[in-house]
Amino acid sequence: MDVNLSPLSPVDYVALIIFLASWAGYQYFATSAAKRGIPSLMSVMSKYREDWWRGTIHRDLKIVDANIIMNLSNGATFFASTTILILGALLALLGTSDKAIAIMSDLPFSSENQTLLWELKIFLLLSIFVYAFFKFTWSLRQHTFCSVLVGAAPDPNSDPQVLKDFVVKAAELASAASNTFNYGLRAYYFGLSVLTWFWNSWFFIVATLFVVTVLYYREFKSEALKAMIGGNPSKIL
Image (tube, rainbow, N blue to C red; front, side, top):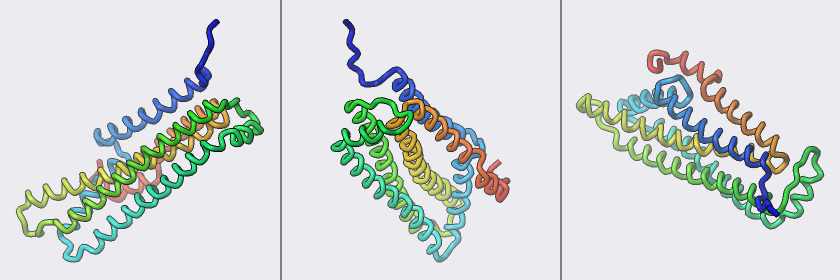
């Protein structure tokens, strides 16, 4: 007699595959679209960062630039600290699985949760937020590198090629720091979709597709993007 030892049902497998494919697929799509020059928040902001670093060279007092980097670093620091708290809460949840399963089972449309399946879902969330923590802390370090570049900005009377090279390198580093932060932020979005898996596998599928839709419209169709393109079209298109 065949015995199915897997705690995952066929719907669970489908939901998990859709989740992983959606996350990886959207990450690839957004990155490749930016490289191809398709207007998006990622590609547009990279152009504005070049303008920022070009202005940095000609500013005698670079307090503005230092404050910009500090504000960006504060965002990464906040999310890194919050992620640590979330990880601690998830670890604590492992010790109360039976009580949590009993609470979830009282909800309408709730699917059956075995202890092993429940713990697998928690470990998935742990993996997501560990990934997010590494992204936020790496973004923080990259912003620290940007602050060093502010101090190392060349004299505005230097050779034009030197100035151009500095702007390109500094803008690339700032964009890398920002993109790394975005990867961590996306992990939060997809982590929220995993929460619905504790309730019902079908809701997990719907939540995953909803997250991808929200990310796409914010990245490629938002009013913020339209405003930035309208503010500097010659630099972007």
